[in-house]
Amino acid sequence: MYKKIFTSLVITLSVWLASSLSANDSYVMDYDKETTCLVRNFKVYENPQWVSKIELTNGKKLFFSSPKSMIEFYLVPGRWFDIGVKSEEDFKDILVTNFATLKPIDARGAFFVYGSNTTSPAGDDLVPFATYEEAKKFASTHNGKRVMSFNQISDALIRLLNGSL
Image 1 (cartoon, rainbow, N blue to C red):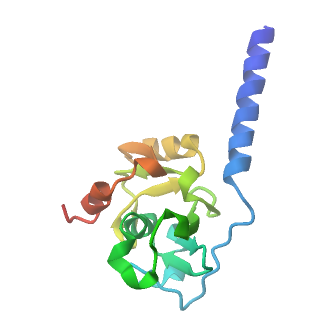
Image 2: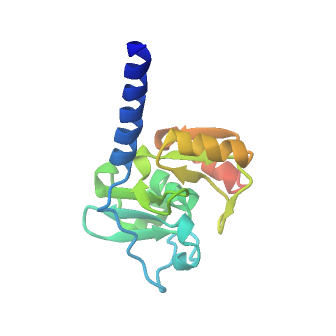
């Protein structure tokens, strides 16, 4: 009996800790009606549930109309050479909007649903969530094919989503 109580307590604390760590209230999506997606040139305010952002160490803020667009830039920043990203150290914050809560979260700790029936302004996309459990639940109700972490997303997957393989 004590083992079940202890196990339940450990699980509850783990879930609480994971949600506390992934929900950083200091993250802000500070765009306005003129802010456009760096990759697709869409106004990001029109679809706030999809907005993503990269803040560089030099203070420059880059906004994207979707996680796919942000990751497209992140993986191959040289395509936008005028931004001046030279290495991984140039990235300060990489944020996505948690699809479940509409709050900004750290993309590097997020979970993304691939292959769902939910599309962004940029088309087929990766739907971001703060926890694996949120992502798995969404995937099961929206025909998601796979839940993956930020580090599992490749340039080939982004090209597939863009229809350019």
